[in-house]
Each structure stands twice: as structure tokens, then as C-alpha cells.
Image (cartoon, rainbow, N blue to C red):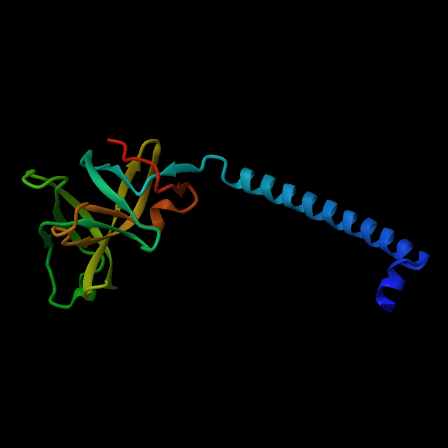
Length: 186
């Protein structure tokens, strides 16, 4: 009962008006800060593009279009590699870093494919839901519409996968937002 009596007093009315004024000022400050943050984000990334869960990406050196699965959970890209040849290969994979490698990529089953030459930039262990594999990594130029990037790509046997290319965060970063509702562009 005393609480209700306090609400009816003049002191509470004045305090209530003051609280509303302070609250309005805080909301104005927050709104202004939000607008500044949005402007900064727009200035930082003016050309962010929407990309779907699947798309077609071109490997630039060969001009080969590859069906790709977009995977925001993958750190880097991965490409299906039928076979590879390392010049002066050593049994220790770490020793092969920096050596030239030639590998065969295909965009469809039955396609003859294209040979690509690059240098091995790393040897990594990749954990999947099924196993842990060791793979070589190379730098490749990939293009999606008007965006072309040189990114590290792991060479992988993706024969059992539907898509020969997996697009990871290293390709998506700073230029793409993923919208799974978008349909693949051929």
C-alpha cells in the first residue's frame, strides 16, 4: 500500500519526468551511435555481394567453371584433385613445401579436366566428420562474377562429393554475405 501512495506523490511525478528525460537522451545517443556504426560498416564494405549456398566459380588459369558449395564453417577452400605430380618429391610432405606441383582438376564426371601448375604453400591436417586427412595447399586464382581472389586451396579427393569446389571463409571474407535462399547461377 505504501508503494501506491508513493506513486501518487508529487516527488514521484517529478522523478518520473526526470527519468523519462534521461531515458529519451540515452535512446537518442544510442540511435546516433547505431547510425554512425552503420555508416562506418557501409564505408568499409560498400560492395558486399550476396552469394547462395551453391554457385559456379571459375579457376582463372584454366578458365574452368566449377560447381561450388559455399561453406562458412570451412577456413579455406578445397578443390577436387584427380591426381598430382610433385617435382623432385620427397617422402616427407613438409619437405615438399615450396616445390612445384602439377594437378588435374575436373568440373564434371567424365570431363577430361585441366592440368594446373602451382607451388605447394603448405601441408595441413584436415579433420572432417569422417576422418583426419593430410593435404597439400596451393594458391589459386578463383573468380565469382566480378570478384577475383588469389586464395589458398587444399588439394583433396572430392570424388564422393557433389561439388568439386568448396568455397571457404578465405574467399568469402570482406566481399560476400551468404543467403541460402539464392539459387545457383550457371
